Image (cartoon, rainbow, N blue to C red; front, side):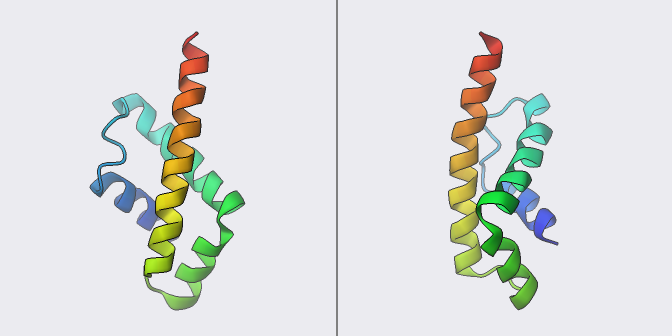
Length: 80
């Protein structure tokens, strides 16, 4: 369920718009891994409340922003 929330939220709120189609899957895989490692409270909130709370949304927004910066940097480094 958490992974579905991450994918749907990220896509429907325009966070993937700046990526090439071929980059989307890689970004989402890395975002899920980033959340598990750096924002474990996200999964705990969803699991315990069965709700996408404001706190969970804030954690997800932070993770998307942080991971997008890392992702774009890595993509740039790989191109050069």
